[in-house]
Length: 378
Image (cartoon, rainbow, N blue to C red):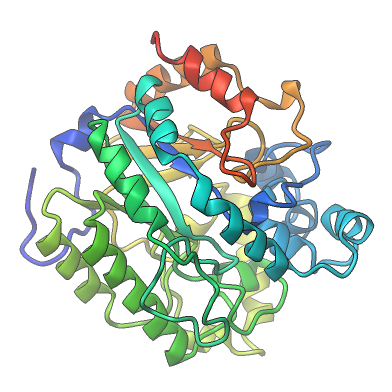
């Protein structure tokens, strides 16, 4: 492994454990697992991003974990579903339900299923875009101070995963948090820039990332969408590599300057972004320099051209990451297809990060568990 003098910038020689890890698991489990709904009569994300506008994608979002945003778009299938099935129930009410069921989740059973499937590492979503924190964080949300689990769920899972010989990583939504001042995400600006540029949010993210590092020493820091315009990002990475020398960071730390978040710049940004994405399906890679990463990430696609870079392709077993109760058998990838996908990615310096989306009670749905069991003989 090549150790940089400052921070890891475009490192092409990651730790040996990552080079040898051709298969990992990412877990999406949160308040969105309670309603567990997204439309299914649409293509997957990888196809939508190529063929539809981002506005259409968000209104017909196939990701059930985006329920909290989709329900705010009045013409979306999720908004109609919510009105019919939940009426005036708020998204925060789903979080209250999850806090009740979380105590009974058998993380040992999760870890056993992942290890038996041949996973080399496991990443848990510690905070998705909805802002709900999946451990008893000491860094309190200034708007929703109780919007977190009241025990160390992440710590329990980390212990179970490592006891089975697997590496452990933490996903954290750095740029988006819908508990902070939030307008529905429906275009490029609100998606790639986020809505909150306050120092309060920057400090909140900074402190929670440090808390994740100090408490769990994660082997992977898995950020999503981007990172606030905060000059301390390099300092965060330096601290992380000091604490976890064999650790890695993914590539979703893009930073746009705060002036781009002003009301008169956003429309211009939307126009430019639409043109870039229409021209190049590597979308956000062209919109901002990806300055920091140990490996690149793809979502529902395998066509990454940088053959000298290690990468990871992530996808759900169906069209969603969060559990979707309406997913049909034809929506699921087969175990044989997964085996072929792992082999294809391995030949390109890639690995598969396959999602598991437990139900509201923390049970791995039978369709997903069956696929995991069929991977044991690869």
